[in-house]
Length: 235
Image (cartoon, rainbow, N blue to C red; front, side, top):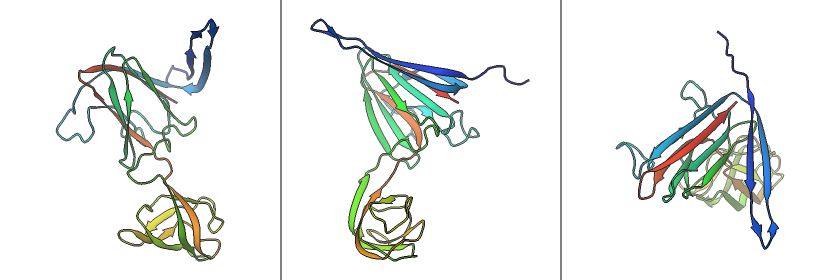
């Protein structure tokens, strides 16, 4: 039979209460996320080491996000809210956020603390995180463009790679990005997704990696197992 559960608004209230020198410095913020139809709240015991010999991340996977519901319960475009709370009164946990390019960043979550992952209110966890061993933004003043050609040359640059977005010049259309790399090792030639507008030599160009999709969240405890609570809401 058809579902009998209607969507509902999720109300998130952030409030600080403090009095200093007889004066109140309270603050309150309310966010309403509409059309929520799925929520998950779990209590998870986080270990101090990896579970399983094949694990590449420390600890345990607490959330897996996939492009479609065919491969998992959390669809990246549908997630609107993620909260992780450390319920322990002594030990911290380390949260590890991996994007869909395999890059990982980490965040210490101390005892009693809460971490909110900011999702996009339209596209969910798509294009919301980036981590890289390379520079996230690189400026190169040796880039050569040829009008109507998508092939670009530059002095050797070890930071340029596919997917990087271009800005800082009118020699290429807005939205241009590196489509392919044409050289091995330090890059001296690459191809854009669209031809250049103008011809120019030694044009200062900004290369930016851009944001990627959140793929998984892992957690590992400090010196003792830690209980955490994770709350996920999706449209």
